[in-house]
Each structure stands twice: as structure tokens, then as C-alpha cells.
Image 1 (cartoon, rainbow, N blue to C red):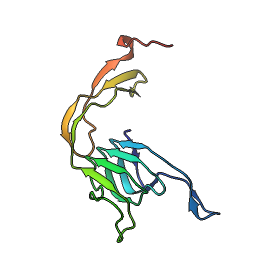
Image 2 (cartoon, rainbow, N blue to C red):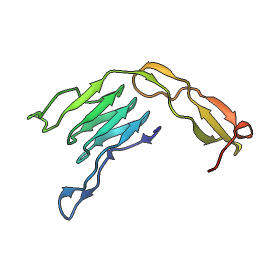
Image 3 (cartoon, rainbow, N blue to C red):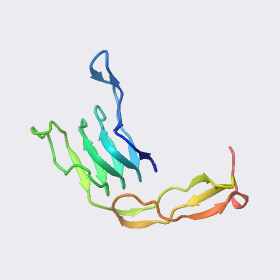
Image 4 (cartoon, rainbow, N blue to C red):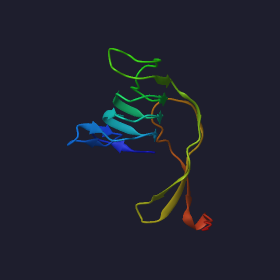
Length: 142
């Protein structure tokens, strides 16, 4: 979540000596910017939500894109032209409620950031968040 990748992003490990991709199965990319191409390689199930990619290459099956800019178009089954498996692409996310996250302010204090729910979102959402100082946050450690 909330990644900014300046180059390409591989979602699998390539074994150069064996000339094969390692096993990878399942993952999530959300509210992230990949300025280069994403290669899902041997990835079997993957969800990209409200992200922006330069391009999305390959994949084995069950790649799902919701509100992702430059996602490949939907299609069912083998595409002989691209050797790609099924993709499902949805233009926008009907509603997104991101999880709160912690950040450190320029003065070194911790902040709890609470994103607001948004509707019909396409692409990134680095909106302003409600910030709560840690002096107002109750933490329960189990």
C-alpha cells in the first residue's frame, strides 16, 4: 500500500541459472504508483486497486484490476497475441476505505493518519487525511 516505485516492478523471483520463474501466488498492490512496468511473471492471483502503472505485463491467471490506470483490458481465456491469461478490469472502485497508518512528522512526533472513505475512485488517492497526535491514541498491546 502507498508505494512509489521509480522503475519497473517484478512481482516474482526469476532464477537466472535455471532460466525459470520461481513460484508466486497471490498478492495486493493498492494506492501505489509504478512509473515503469509491472511484471507479474509467475504470479497466479493478484489484485491491483487504485494504482497507476506504466504498463502491466504478463501473468498466469486471475489478475484483477480495480480503478487502476493503465491496467490491461478485461478478457477471458488465452489471448494468442499476448500469451496472457484471464484479466478482469473494473474502471473505478465503488467505495474505498483505506486503513489508518502511522507517520512521523518533520518534528519527529508520531501521527495516526485516518483516510476518509471515497467513492468511484480511479487511480491514486493521496488525499489529505485526518491526523491524530499519538498523545490522543490508545494502543493495546496483546
